[in-house]
Length: 376
Image (cartoon, helix red, strand yellow):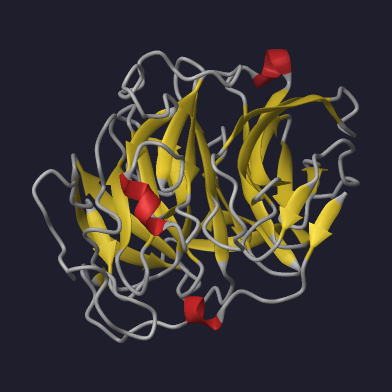
């Protein structure tokens, strides 16, 4: 069962002040074009690769489907949990377990209805041998507290080498001050083991008044996360009106929201003291003003698109409907390039497949799965 609500997202998320770019994008890339792999997806949110050319895709209203190597959509999988598909909520991120070939395990997150409202939950399940259902579905983590909100669920998953799971959690919009306190999961990254227990190496384990799952704090609404080639957790989060950020989310670090930000209130005006830096609070590796509304990210680890692209970080833009290619040197973003500036579709997810091709999901009622093709 899926709860659906008809109102659209607040128009405030479509507005943006015409401010100068924090890092100017270079001229568009002629390197790639796109080909449609599958179409007819309703607001798809995430894609995961499961071998033999097959993929699994989530649709925000609450469906999960297998896509065949030929691009054919399977019927919705059975046993997907009830989701609260309200506002930005629904069935959201999805990753295949690192050992999927052996255990057929999928990890996914969604807006979970419950007493007090809703919150982001993380679940694990086995994909049946016939690719028609989820078996042994288990919710292993639920964000606390639940709160009645349509906004800021976060909900990106990244799996570390040891099998533990990082999950990004939004501040729920009205509860943004919670991002600075450790007695809740709002505006945090959490790290749990596959059974849902707090990872024993988490920075706040054993601290009085702190939830043990917390990895980092001071976040707003992270809609992209990946383990980089350097083994670290990279995240991208939405700023308010300006101030989208790229961060490396490190253990115990505070990323400042809402004390520091490069954005401002919707409609204008300072947030808090209107400051962009403060001792003890982390600075982003890169930020955007105006906001691009980032969602989905992937490092390019192959040479499918040439040597210049290898090592680049790709970030999707919902608002401006392109892909940003960030050239990264250590902890610095040294250059940005707009890829597919004429795409004219909201980019929701960006993933690199096991064979090195980049795939995009477009956020629409008739959404598409696209593959980037090298030109020439």
